[in-house]
Length: 81
Image 1 (cartoon, one colour):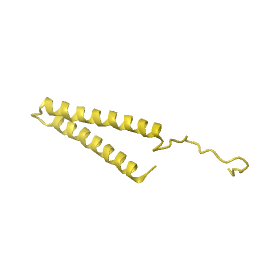
Image 2 (cartoon, one colour):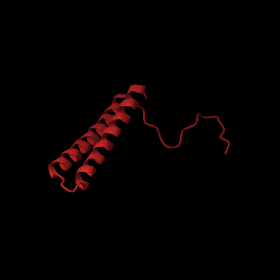
Image 3 (cartoon, one colour):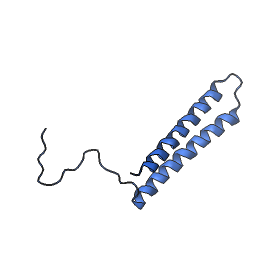
Image 4 (cartoon, helix red, strand yellow):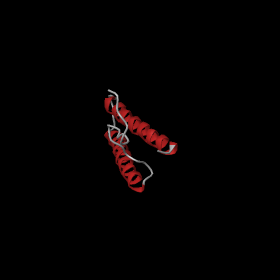
């Protein structure tokens, strides 16, 4: 995966977490404004959906290559456990 894609994904995840805590802050204030809470959560959900769709698109276009949890070994190579 190209480094730019990694940095972009990490940045978007940080923005998502920031908006989650921002909504929690507005919710926990004594005089909270429900519009601010909804706006922060709406931004968070929008970024989450955009990140998911962009990862699917990048996988489809071959920019990133998903792999399994267990790496596949080349034939004829013994595995020492």
